[in-house]
Picture 1 (cartoon, rainbow, N blue to C red):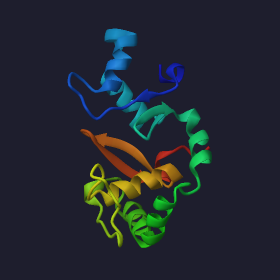
Picture 2: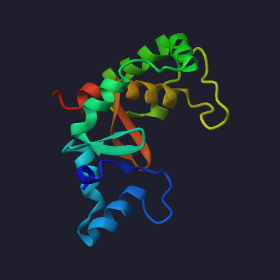
Picture 3: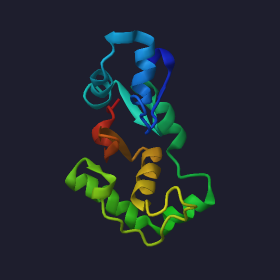
Length: 159
């Protein structure tokens, strides 16, 4: 179904059920089981999560090709430049310890992310999101609502 829709937006709020589950259930009804989406994302790897959207794995190359360079925004590039050691620490942590949630990764940033409040004290999450956009890390699953991160080479197919 995600193939036909093109994408399935994820929303961290779940008043009744997660939005992705509601969308799929509204289209295929009681034949849908939330475990099916989880299996497609985490085991079958026919879908991937990228920027709060579930997409067909066949589209991965489009996003990685587009985003393989650092951000076009100077503020982000400067922060990443200032925190290059932090970037390497995050990648090393995932390489040696395997899949991790953001709060299990040490914040070794030199310069904190300049937040207006929404991302305050979330340096690790900011770094992971920038590394995801570049295709260096990927979301390998979820524990509840928390994303589990790993090196992209261990999550995405090699083709």
